[in-house]
Length: 183
Image 1 (cartoon, helix red, strand yellow):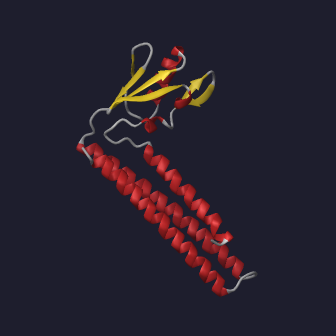
Image 2 (image 1 turned 30 degrees about the horizontal axis):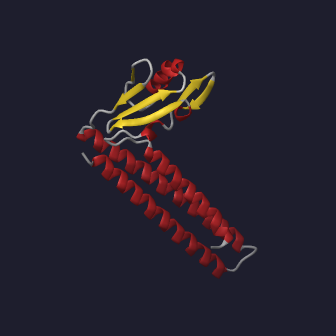
Image 3 (image 1 turned 180 degrees about the vertical axis):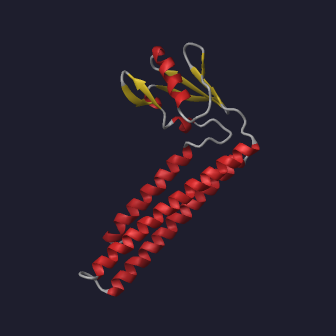
C-alpha cells in the first residue's frame, strides 16, 4: 500500500473503531457491561471510568452487578448512573449495585434500530469525508509532484479503501440492528 494512502487508511480505521465502540454502548435486550463504558464517577475529585472503581459482572442475562472496591463509593456510583443516559435506576444492598434491564418493547427496539442506522450513516459520512480530503490532497500534488496517471491510481486505491470500510460499517450496523430486533 502506498504511503500516501496509509494515512487515510488509519483515519478510516479510527472512524470505524469509533463507530464500533459507540454501537457497543447501545443496549440490546441482554445486559452488556459496555453500556457503562461512558460513565465517569467522581472518585476523590477526579472523573474516573466506572470499570476502574469496581468489578462489573453479569450474574443473569438481564442484570449487571457492580461491586465497588470501596463500599463508600456506592452512592457516587449510583449518582453517576442516574445522571447518565443508561435509563435504568440502580438498586443496592449496601455492598453491591444491581442494574436490572427491562425487556425492550417493540417500539423501543425500532427506535434503537433507527439510532444504530443513524450512527452507521454518520460513520459512512466520516469515511466519505476522509476520501474527499485524500482526493483533494492528491489533486494538490498533481500541480507539483506527480503525474495524472499516478493521481488516478491513488484515487482508485482510496476509493477501494472507502468501499471496504463502508461495507464493514454496513455489516456492523446490520448485525447490531438484528441483535436489537431479536426478542
